[in-house]
Image 1 (cartoon, rainbow, N blue to C red):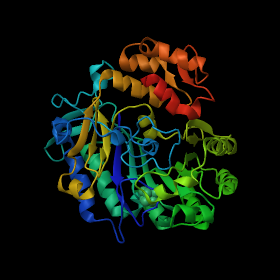
Image 2 (image 1 turned 180 degrees about the horizontal axis):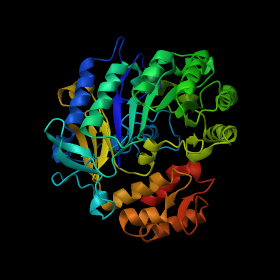
Image 3 (image 1 turned 45 degrees about the horizontal axis):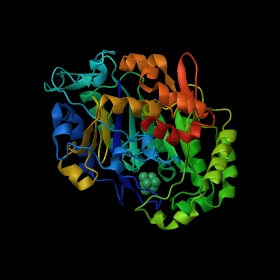
Length: 451
Ligand code: SF4
């Protein structure tokens, strides 16, 4: 099974802390962007024949791209090990990364070559158009995530066209999780009805905070009342939805009230990321406002306490039973995904690749890769382990053995022992997982595994 990410790189205005791939548009996002996405989906089989590894730069992406920031580990596609212990807001952009090499005979993804369950995707003739293409095999597509940017800016008819293209050209597994990221100020009862009716079954709401002072500091267009209204509209229509929060934003004392408001709304899933002041954004000049490590940890632990009734299953994510995000779990397990749209990452068959990060270039050549990198088997195993240690459950020894054909201890025994001695990991017969102390220190765990 694979996951699909669709990037919508448009927002009504740009938030000053944001470094996601997006641009401000005043009206509807351009129709030719949706056309390009659909073209990319349709030509996915062509891409799989080797364009990913044969484009301009079949070499390692720049450091900043090969190790996308933690927020990428959320929605759009870029789930790489974080370079910072501060896990950011928005799982959007580009979520994921990578791509396949060997084309013919069906895309034999690396998992298959390692002897695991066959048939993630296969090539065959589409009955509806007569052209050869890729369709979901036995596993199928397990999730689709519309991230951005602001996907809720797209008209329902445009979202429907993209979903139809995925269904017709690739195929969706029954019950696949289909998520749409939405900004509170876009949400109306009519739009939410339309999203639900077209098959979207999960909404991720970018609330960020309920305090108006914090929202003004962040440059958001909505206020707390708008956020509350949007939550009510979504909760009435969707069983499965997520509420995004950002902490570490002045005034810090507002955090407790926002936590209480969120706990009272009781969404089935909550993501809480610490604000970072990214180079190249307007907030770079405000870096002096950044909270210190102790304050960061205090705010993080307040969220843990407020959401004690949830399963804190990932460093920054909380879920009611049965509501873990299936799409993001693909990133956190370092499994395969395909990204469509500007700057979107893919990770298939051991190759991580990225579409052009400028929309003009993307429109000219949808699906052409600006960067691609074939990872060694060792690199894949290291990244898989680091990503799994973002999860409370850690890595299952059975899973690791079935995926790589060897024991995790055989690959990383000395490193794991050292981390266990430091109190960052613990182990039993079935798994190796982060301790309560190691859970928020994924970066330190990652560094120890790489060294
Ligand atoms: S709405 Fe989201 S993607 Fe758009 S600028 Fe703001 S933070 Fe970035």
